[in-house]
Structure formats: C-alpha cells, structure tokens
Amino acid sequence: MGIYRIYKGEDDASRIEPLPPDSPFWASVKTAGTMFLKEFPAGTFLDWHPAPRKQVVMIISGTLEHGFEDGSKHTFGPGDVRVLVDTEGRGHTTRVGGDEPLLVAVVPLA
Image (tube, rainbow, N blue to C red; front, side, top):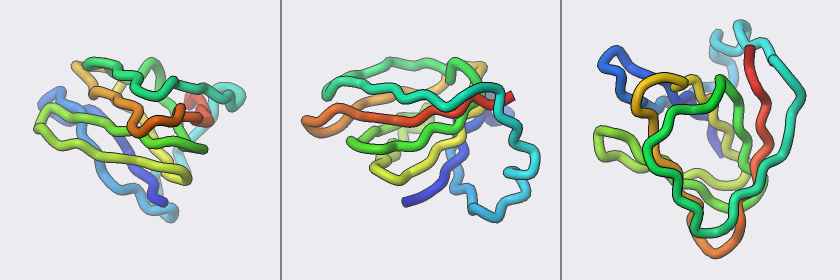
C-alpha cells in the first residue's frame, strides 16, 4: 500500500511522487464533495488526459497503471491512494490491468 501525489511539473508534464502519511500536504487538503465509487471494466484504457478535478482516489479492488510523459509507468493495487492534482496539461494515461474490473473510491478536493 502506498500514497502517491500526481501533479503537473514546471515543464507542464505530469509527475508522480510518494506522499508520506505525515506529509504537511495533508494539512491543506479540504474536501469539496462527498466520496463516490467508480468502476472501470477490465481492459479499460484512457489515453492522455489530465485529472478531471483535484481528487483523492483509493483503489478498492483491481489494478491500475498510469503512464507518464517521461516513459515511466506505475502500477497500483488495492489499498493504494493517489492524490491527483494534475488538472492541466497533457496529463497521464490510465490502464486497468488484469481481468477484473477496477473499483475506486473518489474524494473530490476543493
């Protein structure tokens, strides 16, 4: 299990970094809505896109892979938490791995 921040760097490319649970970042987090669940079928691929809003996304079941402009790919599974704030720029790719659907809990941020 891990917590990761996905953000837009100074070069407008999306980046990823581990985010420790005791990071000062959490003090600034304000929710903007209610948590909701979203399911993606196995094999789903979303080409380059920025996050639709600032949000915290927790994987409940299934696996997910994000691709970044630097060619890196990161795989996430149940229990992993991602803080997506790359709402501008080219963004990242998203692929649902394996043969089971992906179920995530999403918390929109202010």
